Length: 522
Image 1 (cartoon, rainbow, N blue to C red):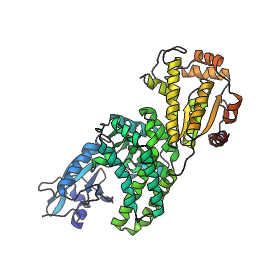
Image 2 (image 1 turned 45 degrees about the vertical axis):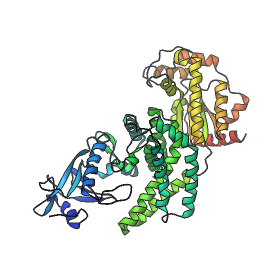
Image 3 (image 1 turned 90 degrees about the horizontal axis):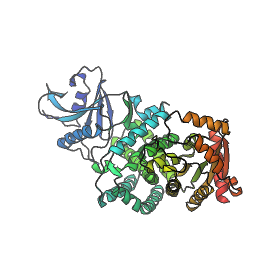
Image 4 (image 1 turned 180 degrees about the horizontal axis):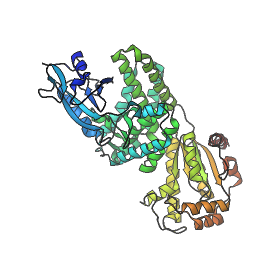
């Protein structure tokens, strides 16, 4: 007996506990625009709808089987303990049966079932998603991207990428105001022209990789073995063979639209510290706009296809939120460059880390980039002396050049930047200010201070544990005798923070924004 996939008989049959090869109490059905998932308690069974949206085609049984197999193969690198196998659905005694004998009428992906509230969209809504979780997630995504297979460079990759971005506008026509679409289209066309060379270079340099492709919070889960992404795109290579920035932009966009921009900044900074791909972040605004409009487009499809009145109102509200984020992301920006300055042990890194979420800034760390330039791991001991080895004058000049060149590119993209370096040399501080001016950005110096006794105590404590910084008492002694004091014309752009006292981060963030604006105007 042949049963059509979309028939009520098949769906009703799979809602029966007797359809499964293990004990089942009750079956729950969850639907998306492309699949149905049957939850049985211990396992979840996912079958694909026979739909064709252009970007995917599940219209034949052979295609659905193929993409079930692809789903398991691809997702095992992301969540190996979650994806188990592809199972045929046959007809036994006139009823659908998972894994039964006979000719398959459908195929299902069998997965280990997890609690709905363990998805990160739910964790965030419940107030259970914290900074440490996001740091863990950033490390996991960075590892996946670093291990991912690079896509062979081709002009087609760039053409496909640009077309994917442009396709959103046509698909949203009729669902959102024409004035909104026109403004968005003008912005994206300008950006694609500005960054065409950058995108081409990233393609040639191997930053287009086999990625996840749908890295939103609802596709990330807290499992006993850790936080893992799942449900990567199996149905369209073009949607997963993308720039790694386009991949994680889905996640940062999703955090922002849900009111967690601070966590988006935490994620981004940890990811960039691990990968070192700071220049790629220049493309983040483009890809975040693209991802927000993808979500709006998908909601539009859902509204047109499902016709479910119970969810229509919430779907329209969600569509408006994604469009509002896209609008905000395309507004003119006047970013700020914050240069941290102070002796070793004065709290520059500690303070700059806490400024990142409030300023929505990308932090560039001299200690980390110095080690990266030298080919060393972050906590490796370079065995260098004062002004020698990786700390000699040439190396230090190269570090500051790299930090400020990267800062300039990020500022040009409209992103706030914190440069965490000592900036004890007046020439380095002048370079930082010039970088801000050339980029049309505001500028602020944040000077961290503490008593010499406290500085010595902190450096002694630091020396007992592995650290990115190699500065000790001897380095502090050298700094105290060789640093350039702030000049009169620098004081107007400077905020001094005593790190031995209590610090109001929110108030300090506001001060930085005000001082930066004044310094720029001056």
